[in-house]
Length: 300
Image (cartoon, rainbow, N blue to C red; front, side, top):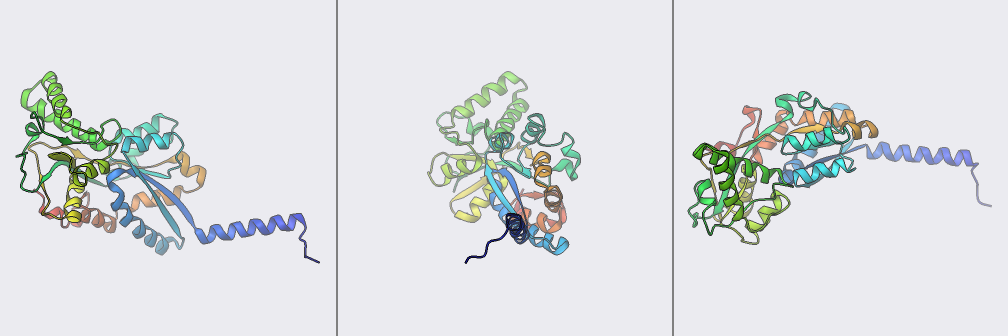
């Protein structure tokens, strides 16, 4: 005759099994980030996991989600349960303050450098030897050019391009009307608006579309490292724009899931020398200047 447990005993046993499984699995957090930070966090996450294990004795897992920065922010605002966000522009974090209070209004004060652990700038990636002769923003707006830029409506990368081009034109001609006309000419040369920076990279490097890709410096350096410096050159325009990617704990989710302690520690770890060195190796510009190493040292 099979052994039967009383209902209460069976329920208790099931709960103990679930608790045991949770203890083995540890805590899991989700980092919702922008498109071209994918490889960066693939290296940072295991470093944090080991650091947390050594310090707290607990097992933690970090999952990643990547896409166009603005699109990612809207996904979180629509219910994607991110414990932390690591976007590439402040407005995408502010959206989460304004839409549902997912992030606290004082998020900039919670981590150093207004919650930005590294920076990057906008550059041009051109085909080897620069056959189109692209040296500055004017060259991108010439008739017949093809320029690859992600969609400014969904990608912070694209929005930084828009702002840098506007700033260049404003400095050169001194009026908003001239700047607007210049930016319109440049974007008229964009044959396809990909949703994010990585999609734009694919269009330029794998589909061989365009004379130039406007992207973040770290992405341009990564392309050279992966596909070979014999295929592409990096051009630094006379005026660029600094991107300072912001980070924040998604308070509403972290409090609901009980992950605030780990989520906060994860973002604080981004300022640690180990994480800063990883950023430098991926072509970003870390806040800790002592951690800057190649390829950063070869930049102008």
